[in-house]
Image (cartoon, rainbow, N blue to C red; front, side, top):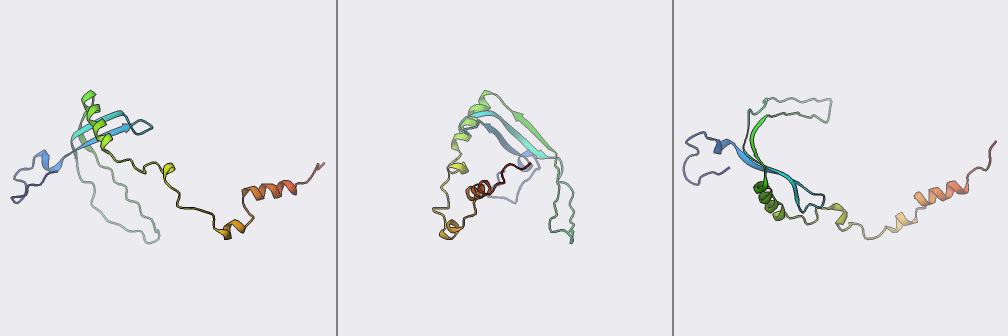
Length: 135
């Protein structure tokens, strides 16, 4: 949405004041190439949903479900794919894969290391204390 620097606001209520444009991009598993994409122009909601407030004092979690219907003109094709590939190439993906992040742990705390109750110790103690052939 673009707001002019001068003036009191919109003089009309055309689509440029209440709509938007969005790009939906589905990349390949590596996140480098666009597999499918759509550009949605003139996306705007049909209504703003119900305006209501409530509180359940017996529950600490209160979830508000909101369902809005939108209208959109979707574009797809080779030109859309080229444009979305440019958008995808411009996205910074540094540290996006949590498996490649540096661990926040450098070493095991000596107190934790001194406790002999891990998976390996449990399997060794169970196998050492197993009962032989029971008839």
